Structures are given as C-alpha cells and as structure tokens.
Length: 114
Length: 113
Image 1 (cartoon, chains in turn red, cyan):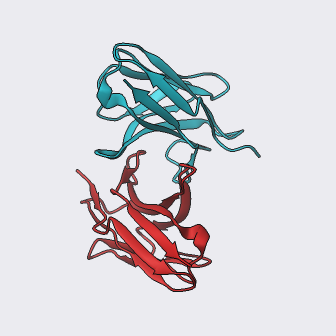
Image 2 (tube, chains in turn brown, cyan; image 1 turned 120 degrees about the vertical axis):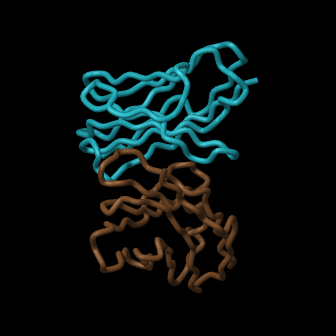
Image 3 (tube, chains in turn orange, red; image 1 turned 180 degrees about the vertical axis):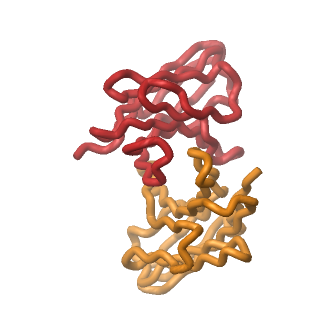
C-alpha cells in the first residue's frame, strides 16, 4: 500500500522569506503523480503544484517549486517570498498512474509571520 | 466559471439518523470524487463516479453510498450515523476519470451528536 508522510506538523516563516515543506512517500509503482494541495481556513483544497514521476525536471509554479528526488522518494515544496496569504494547511498527495484516488499525507500547518 | 459547489456547508445530526450531501461539479466535468477528512484519520478516499456509475470505492462500510445524476451532480448518503462519522466531506470534480487535475469544493462539515 502506498503511504505519504509529512513529518512536520507545523512550520512558520517570516513574510518574504523562503520555507521548505517536506514529504516522503512509499510506492512500488513506476508511473505516478505527486501533488501539493493548500487548504486555507475556507476549507477548499487548492492545487498548488503537481509533478509527473517520469519527468526529471522539477515543477515550478511562480513562487512555488518542488524538489523531486525519485530514488529517495522525496517530494518537498519550496515557497519563496512567502506572503501572508500563503498561511494554510499544506497536504502532499500521491496518485499512481493505474488508480484514480489520491493518498494524502497528514498535512503541515504553515504560519506566515508579518 | 463556477467552482465545485457543496451543500449544505454545515450539518448537525444525531446518531442513527441518515444524511445526504450534495455536490455540483464544475460545468463540463464528468467525474466526481468524495473524500472524508477527520483530525484522526486525515483525508481518505470514499468513492468516484463517472457517467452515473461508481468507478472506484475506498475502504468504507456499506453505510456510505453515493450516486451521480445525468447532469454530473452527485450525492452521497450516510445511513445509521455514528459519532465517528463526524467529519468534513469534500467533493472534487475533474473533466475526465483519472484526470490528475482535481478541483475541490469547500466541503460539508457534518457533526454527529
């Protein structure tokens, strides 16, 4: 069974600084997708960034980028120039290419300090 | 384009009752998935519907069921509610089945007393 582990229940960062959220996963699949979702107090899950396992290049979306280490099964999220609006719960998620449901990590609560 | 709409936002029920939650996907999206979110178990997949058929089901008891209508709107039903069913129920839609771009609603917070 696939598992996703987020070892940091809480993180904080100063506004305008950079923070990295960690995620590791366990799978025997070779074809899969990885995601970072953000859940603000509104409760809506918002897709931040996604990575296809077959792509060696790390995904980037504006201030958000990932460090995908396939051999180490690691998928960290880097947020640059942190903004107050980045404060939220962040979930790492995994989906194998052969299945349709997402497996989520336990989440990291990010606080952005002014 | 309107996002995924879930109703109601909040619901309070008592043990033994049943409840129905509704989800309207983004226009044009044909796949609807449901997830349960609790502080203890985190986010867990319930089921996925596509073209009015359940395509995939998570590890939940038969008290949890759902359906999808011809307009892609979906409902999930929980019968004989238990205290442990208290959770945030999230619906997500996508254009096609297996599409990795899921769009989530804001959820229905169910409290079972």
